[in-house]
Length: 101
Image (cartoon, rainbow, N blue to C red):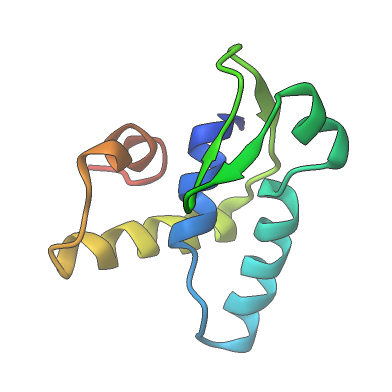
């Protein structure tokens, strides 16, 4: 699935920190796949400042492998945010990619 820098950062922020071993193995792989290489950081001029990440808005997309179980983990994370009343408007576009209405 092609994901932007913004989408990847959002997904990294919502993945569960705890759960069942199988889920955490999927989360670990997702974190690795969603993460950024040194070349990506350099090429997209990514910098961290004041608790946020800034980057060159150049339309860069990365093909990230997201299997069926990983999609379920992401969808469950969004559903939990929604159920807890903690969804944010900036999540909606990414939410729509993973949660079937």
